[in-house]
Image (cartoon, rainbow, N blue to C red; front, side, top):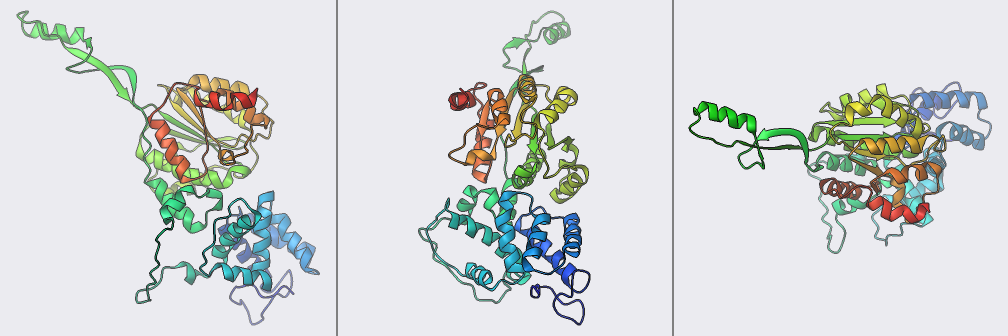
Length: 423
């Protein structure tokens, strides 16, 4: 009825028998796997729900089959285009399959980012990689002819990767971005603590050590021992939003948080959606795959709603005294879209801001030139942050590293930039 999906036959018959037999459940499983590779949050639970939904709805019309799978796999508006193209390609739409094959051919065209045509091609590029045979994804074997391309007057892959949005990256580009994050080093300014240490050129006289030196010499000499304050980088606390609107960015930021945890001590990481989860212990594992597996077992509110005010209240009540000591720097990664419409958020943000040395808000929505702080959650957060920065590509993370290494006075950049917007 719908054509044969690109999977090996499981029995002697080809094509789909019906909703309760044949290859259709297997084809739906492979279709769900392709959607997951293309970037949709599809797991085993949704795959089973899709098979049950098709069994219930039946296979009378292609349109019914399309909307049955759409109701299961699509839960956000921006996922509709990707699902639509993946459905018609996987279930053998000849017209879209021809467009798909044209994407695999080399072409040189001007960059038209921002138009509908560019967005459609970005989506189809991700689907092309998800549905491509495994042999095409692998590196060419030895002995194959090497094709040399003159790259004069072109942008290098590394430079292009620095400015590409995480939302638009293919799986290959995301792997390269993760490797780049693993090599990142975030410099944090050293701050003076309350502790002192002996230092020959210290500005303060250490009276206790000076008197001990006098007693050892029998009073014949009066050496002055000096001391200076111990300098150490402050703790770093990361609060990352894992709601549905932040899903693709939060998964990339987990690799960034793992790189920070491996690079320095006193890094505390938390995830929040509808609840707060402390993942600091898991990120200390050297293997990122093991760390992500343990985090997935602990965190149960992936891709759900966001209750920023409630989760910040829990953080301020149970964790602030443990991790915000000695002038901690807080990185808050969220788009500010709150399911509770900002109820209690301003009070908790004020308390958090007063408890840390510096509060930096990283928002992927700042990648849009026409961004305006209209949501109630965003308006409640903005007055209580010291810096407001985008976080949507590798270049923004590099700029964040520079900002952490050279911190200015509190509430300077964010207040100057957005004071007029909140008036």
